[in-house]
Amino acid sequence: MKDFQDSLKSAYSLALRKLGKSAMTRKQIEIYLLKKGYMQSNVSQVIDKLLTEGYIKDSEYADNAVRNVLQYNPKSKIMLTHELRLKGIDELVISTAMKSFDEDRQQEMANKLAGKHLVRYNSDSEEKIRLKISQMLYRKGFEWSVINKALKSINSED
Image (cartoon, rainbow, N blue to C red; front, side, top):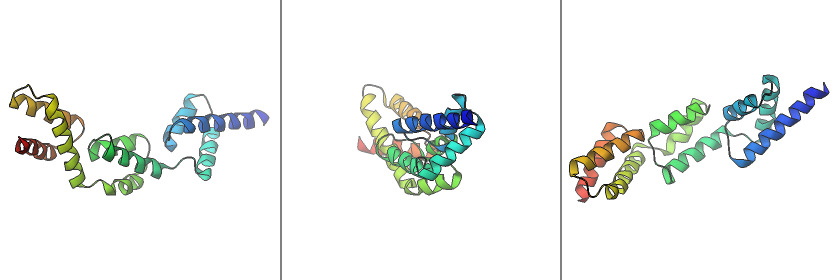
């Protein structure tokens, strides 16, 4: 019984140290502790305790991810949703966090990225510029309709 309690304390301490370095989702902590060799029963108890104490908040994690994308690291709504799903965040939490990520915001981000990259490809032909910018936006997960509008916006800036 003592070994079980020691293992539980150890897992809890390790999880707190990891959370102290960066925010993580419930699923990320679970995977981390399992990889460190802790038994599923211990991991479940540690996660329950962390949730109860408020150290793990998937809704705040999702809100912060949306805020980060909107302010610093532009990418499409589709790509962000996919990334949040991979991190184990519930669909309802994702949809709530995505409310501030409307179509106009997405188009604004694509236009901004296109304008920013237009400067980089200044010496290329217009066709190459359009191709490079459309590929970059596509890699960021933007839909073709958004990409086409962004390309039109940079053409109107010329």
